[in-house]
Amino acid sequence: MLSISNLRKTYNRQVHALRGVDLHVPSGMFGLLGPNGSGKTTLMKIVATLLEPDSGKVMIDGTDLITRKDHARRLLGYLPQEFGFYPTLTAEQTLNYLAKLKGVWEPKERRNLIGALLEKVNLSAQRNQRVGGFSGGMRQRLGIAQALIGQPQLIIVDEPTAGLDPEERMRFHNLLSDTVREGTVVILSTHIVSDVSALCTHMAIIRHGEILASCVPQQAIDALKETVWEGTVSREAAPRIKAECKVISSQTFNGLPRLRVISERQRPSEEFAPAVPTLEDYYLSRVNQ
Image (tube, rainbow, N blue to C red; front, top):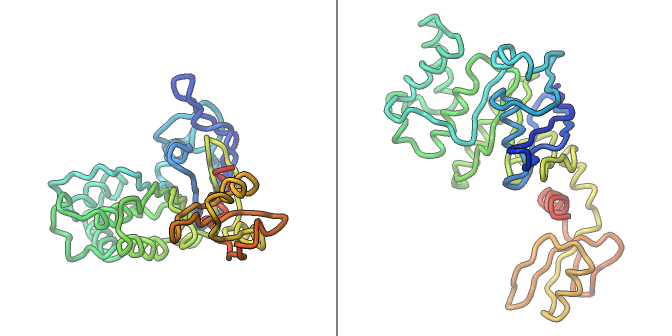
């Protein structure tokens, strides 16, 4: 388990990026959900030893990763939001270079490792293609390959599907699911709720540098049972309902407001029917409170 205790980070003495974050991350896939600017990337960079916190601890197997950065980097695989591949290197050359940096010095071992990684991420046929010509999805798959070098105990993946089309996003989901070894901690930092619902057994929601919730996704959905309603209302009634209920979404249907709301006490009005709650309902209800 990864344990984060009272983690704080302030930029320029004014911007409080993290406000005493406490988080326990079990092995398996863990989703960290939050809107842009919520503190996700700051938290990921601190755990990845790329940023120094003002205070707090990040512990795994009894070792503080903040004070033992050398130890932390031997345990770590990291795919940042923006990965700076050298565009003129091929996929094989890229992994060869990064494997050397990870301490895989023996040439035969390195060749075998690179071949296995390219096969795992379905890039064997592109091993001699320059990375500068890769699509966004291919770059993300290569990013996962380099993150797996050294069989890390902790893998951090920051906004991996941002900008991918639906087909590449699904391919990336399948790849990430297939690469998780038993006992490995994988943190998936994202603002895309479907990534978490498709992949993660545990999750947390962060906003303004604070953890709002930490739970199992199904528990979050169950917490909204019989409280989510959806209906099309008149323009005159919409302001009253928005004032009385927590609005999850507001759209236009046949020229009229179509509202999805949370109302714990009763049906908002006769126009509303019960709706099946989703993880996105839970997420939006917490970040917009």
